[in-house]
Amino acid sequence: MRCGEVRDRVAPYVDGALDGAQASQVRDHLAGCPACRDLVDTARRVGFAPPPPSPSADPLDPRMLEAIIAGVEAPPTRRERVSRWLNGRVEVPKKWLALYVVGLLATVAWGAFGSCAALRPEPAPLPTSASAPAPAAPSSGTANLAPAHYRQLY
Image 1 (cartoon, rainbow, N blue to C red):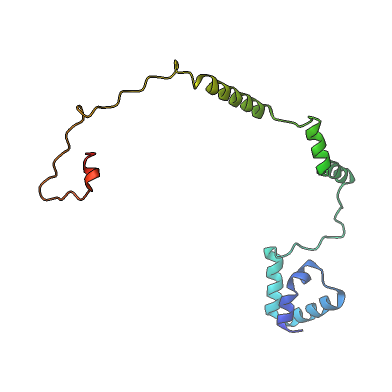
Image 2: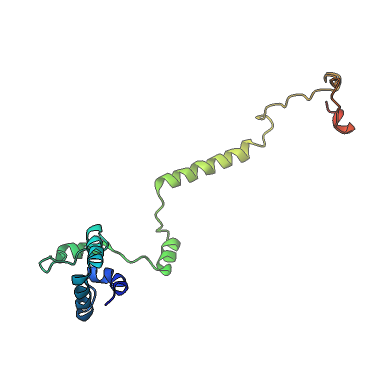
């Protein structure tokens, strides 16, 4: 086996996923190739792949497994969601309900009192042309490039 083939099989070898013949070929190559041996050692050290489980490792505690399975619940189907909605069994957080009620009351108050002329402040009078200041004369040396209808505003 050549170095390129071993490099392609480093991850499965470190994982222990190679079959017996391929693992044997990789081991034979590693015995005579220090570069590939260093690569495999580095892969194991860096955490390229977790070390293979020891045969004495205990499986999950059955009580833990039951708790995990009991805690995982299938999401409701579309029919169940629609049924909940139509039957009024939809859970709405209280803060959202309170926010909705406040918004509804504000809308009703705005509609009822917003159009009432007695509650609106009287608008300020518009300035008349007699009290408007005279337009400033352009300073000498600068040309007024604004069109005539804009000059009337100043």
